Image 1 (cartoon, rainbow, N blue to C red):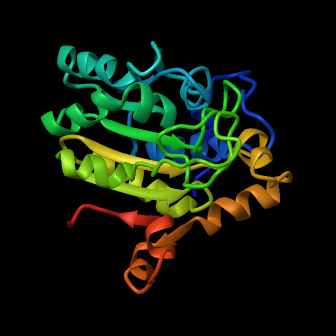
Image 2 (image 1 turned 90 degrees about the vertical axis):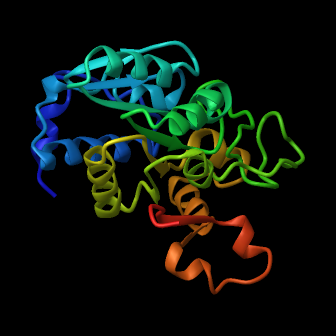
Length: 252
């Protein structure tokens, strides 16, 4: 990967992430994709909502960022794109912001096929507000609001947006750097609504709640929850339905 991504960071910024947070890696992958595509940063707009994921573009990226209301990143981005269709418009926010508070905006933007790219930093909980359960929390996982384990089946966000009409969806771990960069580049290059989900470990909240106290344990735990798409079809039993499938989903 090129190191040109560093030039896209806002000078003097202190990254606002906890030690071991996977969002640091996602920030690098996003900027690497922008750099490798040769996009003019002045022609890009990065929109985010509230939560840990909302801090990825703002204040970190040295470009035009819009840090807006909780759950409203997508309608703000749609409005900006309609007002100035020449903008490369990206929404970068968390699973709580995009799938819980802003879930209706997510599916309807996909249904209407608005020409924006949505990047979801999925840390499987509301990390900034204390580690509460959210729409992507795995079954049985412990959070502050599910101390005996989550009893609700989580959303498969890639399947959700594809069913709603998204042109492209992909999911990778933030530790899968080359795959994540390639997915972001592909999503940005497609006209219409595209979606990239970045599974991002949260050692501070999700890790501690689930007794994975070290960064290494937290990352290994999240990695154990995923399976590559090419292997998912050969799994049987509960494992095939409880693990997140990684890969691209543009041919279903």
